[in-house]
Structure formats: C-alpha cells, structure tokens
Length: 144
Image: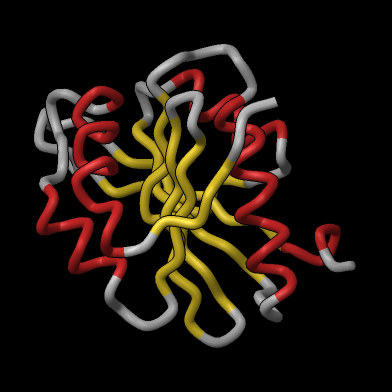
C-alpha cells in the first residue's frame, strides 16, 4: 500500500507538478498551491503513488478544491477521497461540495460511487468552455 502524507505549503511545488500532469490544460502553479495551503481551513494530502486532494473546511461545510491522480484506475482517488471525507466528518462537517467537469466521466463515476448528488450546473465554467456539475454529499455516513 502506498503512503499518504498530509500536504502543507512546503509541498506546493510537488502539488503543482502533479496538478499539471493530471490537468495539463488547466494546471495551477506553485504559488497557487502555497497560497491555498496557507489559508485557514484548507488541508491537503499527497499519495506517493501519484495523487493529491485539497479541501477547505468552513464551519460545518467543506469544499473539495481539487482532486487529481496521475496513474488512473489504481484506487488512488478513492483512497484520497475516503481519507478527506473521513477527516471532514471528524471536524464536524455535515455537507461537502465540489465541482466536476461534465465531460469527466471517471470523476463523475467516482463521486457517484461515494454518494454525491448533483445540485446544479455552472455553464462554461472551465477554460475550455465546458460546464461544471455541482455535487454535494451528506457526510453523516462518515461520522465515527
């Protein structure tokens, strides 16, 4: 099993490289990650197998800021998502939200597997003109 480590501002360069590999047409730079990870309520994880997750917790709600993997179909995204959802639930989060590209069939399937439901749409949200689907999940099932 691979190791997952908590990520902080010192991991910004590694996160930027992974993000570029996962999202080459919409990648974030090192400064973006350092700025995000320095904000209150933002937490991140790195999976040494080639994945990352950042989420923001504000009171009893959370947002998945970004989740990406370099090596697909190895369970990396599921491991990271399970960890992030468990962490959020442990912090008292009741609902978690995210945006996923409508065209991202694999991502949509992952979130559906975890019970996320569609709540809306952001037309032309992404730089390529693609729509984002707004999804949310009640975290009651992840409470210890």
